[in-house]
Image (tube, rainbow over all chains, first blue to last red; front, side):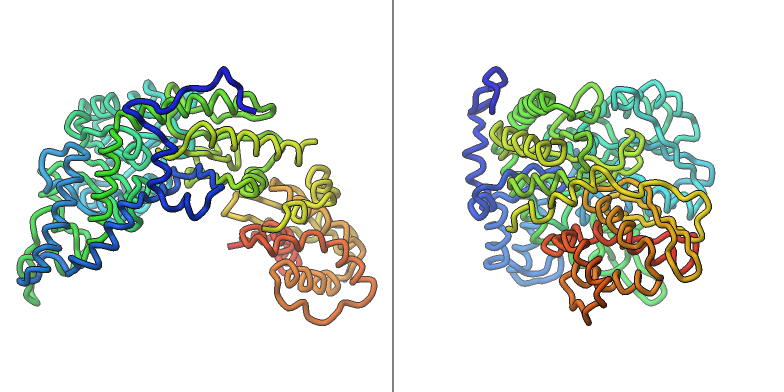
Length: 417
Length: 154
């Protein structure tokens, strides 16, 4: 089945060997035939992350920032060490710019409810794009309905990429924030966020980047990007669920009011008033997801050990292989992803509904996502009700793509014969 | 895991590809839309009631093979039935599709129609697909209740 001409040779860059990497993920030992192509929804977890969480609870667990006793001090140290790892992962200038949140969704909601509700006035504009996930649409709609901002949407062009000229034309003195994805989750379109940020700043707007799909695949340097906020989710970055990161420029965070009140985020409380902590703790009310943060720290170690340039090179090569392989399937249309597609292959097999397709693929032990991928406006703009999406991770290789292609052929046989 | 052909039996593939009564009724006495937000499937069910009897029934929409076949088969079995018979069929079908208690046996002519729907009850092994098989029936029920309604499966 595999066309020899498409074959690339692994191990790839830096000795990158997906087969060997796969052995680091216990899920594949428990499910030997599994072809997992849904890392865009949530990535599998390496053994080191699973063990770290378990060990932390077994040996070092206590609440943080409270106890005088040594165990609590150790726990606090591990939690803050994890924060430092996030700082290094994003190359932020200062670890106080790293706020632990439940995930990217919470990070965006935090910015909307704290920064947005404080600094935006009726008529101010938040500029997003058609490529956004619901989590970068709905928080702004809620804010719009609450305080009367305008939500402006930059369109995609005919190639499925962001229409940069249209984006630039939408920027005005009213634009106060540009909130945009780094890598579109539904299509894999990579957005030139350096350009976006430069243009937005030229118009005096702040910039928030949704890095959910980019963080596991690309090197991210928030100082080089010069963005004001950057969010990502731990569970898509080979870490646990329930934890994520909001990066915010310190001078912005320090001006922002808390968005949730409780323990951990206060300096002094009386029944009359409370004084709040400085960032990042001001935004971390209540006992945080300590084990999640520590587990995410271990996931970041895992990524750094593989090498982020190697991961990028691997995903680019495999994306290219996937495009070539799937393009050879009759009646299959890859959903356009602009000038540069990375890590995500979204497609439509004409005449076969994505849910029927995903069902047949599941029978072949190929796990993909079918639906609108929480990007309903984008999928509808592309003229579809739903797509089938294969998304890549460090453990995938060409054999996974081949298995996907074979299962797609079987589905064609079943529904289109 | 059950063989996928149990889910996608020939009759389902056939009705999925070539749905029957796939048209709008221009002046329906009742109609309703069904929407499954999970997958974006939409179906509109049209009815012409003649007193208590379903004189005509049709549907339009977009959906997966299961939901299209379910709507198609539903229109075939319902034509000429009374509203009470339609509801009895739905109750029995719903129970069988979800693996619930089927309740008392249906009288003979209805039991035969139920047999025709039997292939669709394979969805009970695939919980995520139960709604595909029942969406058009939910829309039917909404149409019977209040002419011109929208129902969601969620």
